[in-house]
Image 1 (tube, one colour):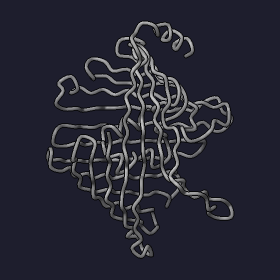
Image 2 (cartoon, rainbow, N blue to C red; image 1 turned 90 degrees about the vertical axis):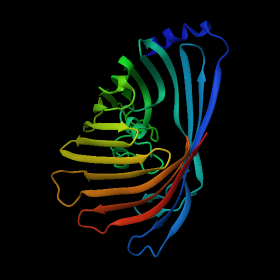
Image 3 (cartoon, one colour; image 1 turned 180 degrees about the vertical axis):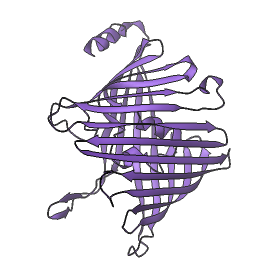
Image 4 (spheres, rainbow, N blue to C red; image 1 turned 135 degrees about the vertical axis):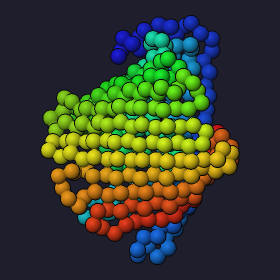
Amino acid sequence: MSLVLLAALAHAGDNPQPTVKMGGVIYAHWGMDLSEGADGANAFDLSRVYLTARGDLNDHLATRVTLDADRIKPVETDAGDLSIDTKTRVFVKHAYLEWKDVGPGVKARFGMVDTAYLPYYDQFWGWRFVSKSAGDEAKWLDTADLGFQFMGTHAKGLVDWQAGVLNGEGYGKLEVDASKTAQARISVDPLAPGGSMNLPISGFVSQSFLGEADAITVYGGGVGFKQDYVKVWGEFLGRSEGGTSGTLISATVMPRIPDVLTIGARFDRLDPDSSTDGDSSTKIIAGVGHDFYERVSAVVDYERVTPEGGDPTHGVYLKMQAGF
């Protein structure tokens, strides 16, 4: 990877003055807990705040830094919950150097980079301010990590791929051993060259290696369809670690009337250990939203999580994003 970066840096003098573009987005919500015993508990809160700086150093090199912010969660200890300062705090989500033209349609990134699969769904779904992807909610995969990635788009979007090697701990944790994780995704969209509709068909695999602990494998894929009046997505993920194997399925349907409203419905089913009974759970999300401007949206939704054999938790929310 060092040779790749050195080759890119060799072009550093080819261009005029660097340029920087700033942007950001706020996720905020009000929610009421309808679960048994919640007694109507409700709160306003900030879900996330992102501030991004993108720099074009020359025709070949670019950088990105994204600062993220959310509320610190109480830390659970053997003695119970540890009370800590719960102010909203800032941390780094992305920080990388990009070589924009490794080859025709191919880029390379080094630093704290997007991972191969989850951001692809988030972009398709478009409602990350309402909910993270199923794989992110289950903590099977992270949206960003430290490492390097190659990615490419070819034939007017017919083929899109991403592959690289990461720490494997995720952007929020330190690397603690010699292990690394290789990830790869390939997506084929036979409708992309036409431009009016999309039918992405994706396959994905993540494999840890080198560490002394049991290797972790996550694999699966998804199929989507998108046009002006509807989005549909279905995916399957499998995870194995040692003698434990689990599955995760997710389905999303989003009919819409352009410039009026969007209806969103999602169903997730998580079974973390297929050999064990009683540990699965389901989650449903159903909401109605409106886009006021390109990056200003609001959604009213109902969410319900039902653990197998347990009492459900559920609530209603007003969620919004405002970007610039």
